[in-house]
View 1 (cartoon, rainbow, N blue to C red):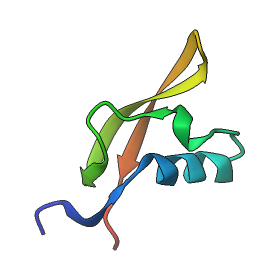
View 2: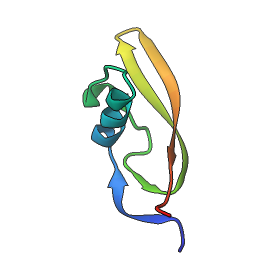
View 3: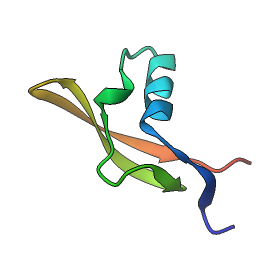
Length: 65
């Protein structure tokens, strides 16, 4: 396996995961500078909390075991 995904991880997927963890985040608040995530690995993502406040997070994409 070369680390590529059959689909991709989108801002909706990330917002859903953050909401499941108890954070109230809209998909429009997720900033993905490199676009959808298509490989396994760690990716820096920006979450816009307010028009002048952002949070930098790392999203880890794992393969199925």
